[in-house]
View 1: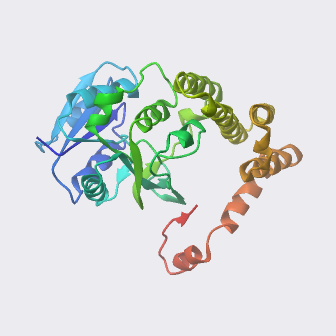
View 2: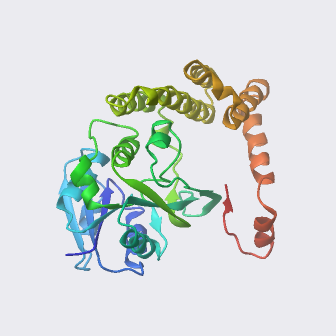
View 3: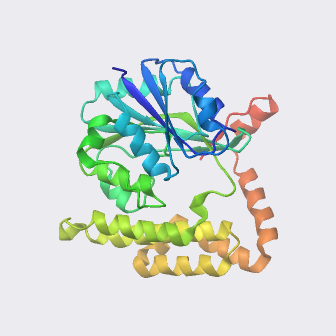
Length: 330
């Protein structure tokens, strides 16, 4: 039996999948199997994958049913003690599995171990940002408040026993299905993080996260289910969660150049938890909304790009001058 099962849902992923698979083959830990679940692709993904000669690779084909069902198909067929999820367009650093497995072997109380994430663009170039996960131990309260815990779908290594205990991904959730899973796992297991950027997460302009209405509806389903049986003293966390998700959606609306929608989500955040106005995120967002209204979307984008450039650390600029370009920590 392999120690790790790597689950890769793939839907029309041929443009990125070869590089993703190569990053798995370059792992310093080699006792793994790779399950590529082709979710009804029409671009030749399955035909390409079936030509891989490495005996550790299995290809499973199914009609298009979405990423949650594809992950569930892979998890059900997996033979490994640990489950590693990997999106078909993301990349792993070579020591990713080795470091996570060592940590889980040494810490039997941990159910999921995460890593930090480098953001890359569609061409695979670093955007200069690192997403940091520092939440460890009992993270359920942080998750239901919509505070970031796991960096992305491709970072966690999870004990197979977690899925046997809490079940599989909810196929009825079109958004935030990963948050739902992390909340369910966190109710029974502790989390941890390897504090190194070991995953490269590819960003796309048309990400499904831009669907604000669908994201809010999914969050409502997840959070109400999570609070069905909790003690009364934990119920205030629900309103904090609604406040934070509305702030998040206001940022998404700003990125979508929808000022009225952004204002609505901003006001909803205050309605759910008035103390949110004291947060740094709310202050930043209020400034952004004021600039967007006064300057217009095009000028606002230029100002934001200038601010992001100015925020780069001196160390990064020195590295760039020396023709070395490590991403800046954020």
